[in-house]
Amino acid sequence: MLAWQPGQEAGNAIADVLSGKVNPSGKLATTFPTDYKDVASSKNFPGIPAEKPTDVTYEEGIYVGYRYFDSFGVKPAYEFGYGLYYTTFSITNIKLSSSKFKDKINVTVDVTNTGAKAGKEVVQVYLSAPSSSLDKPAKELKAFGKTGLLEPGKKQTLSFTLNAKSLASFNTAKTAWIADAGDYKVSVGSSSNSIQQTANFNLAKEIVVSKENKILVPQTVISELKK
Image 1 (cartoon, rainbow, N blue to C red):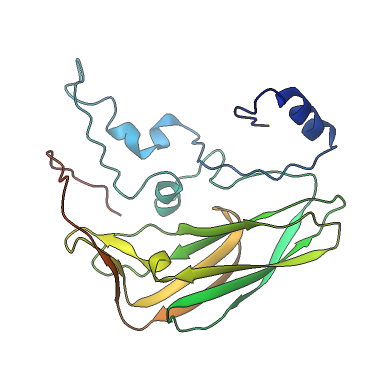
Image 2: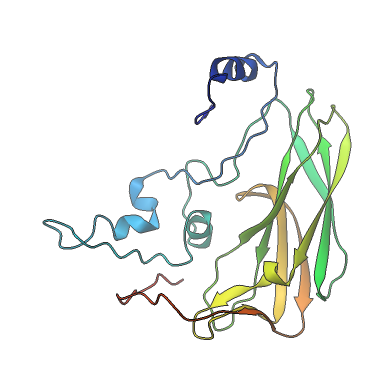
């Protein structure tokens, strides 16, 4: 059990969870590696020169946290979004409002308590974008939601909305957030490594979501990690 910093009621809260009075429903907001060397930034830290480091240039780029572990097939000790409960859940019946993206896509799934104790589940929605000229992670979290307290055998439908911003990646050369044309995959599950439902949709034409100003350019050349 990971309690983090729960405050003055920590003792009561932990006792309630360990005794089963409360069914936990928290999820990890970070990835726990098996080994320090499994973390991408370990290759840059503590910096240069080796004898007495004064400068550190982090080169993992977009591959931070689960984006690195998932994209490069590195198995963590505990993945992003991981969590345990005193029951089990199934996520089924994924539906998209359309197979063609136009302004937005609605995603719905059914969540059923398949165990013997009432509890809540946190559903996570990841998106895999087509890679054209840009390097992109295997998938990125775009939405999440928690059910109400579900009694054993009970079901709830959760709904999520993906808009153009959800599809976009930052194109450094064009200094803009751009949603590339192509096929996108929606993956829904209970953690980054526990995907239970997938569906696909297509974006026919590239969308420039927002144009940015090129300021605060790094003074050091960064050789970013690529797949």
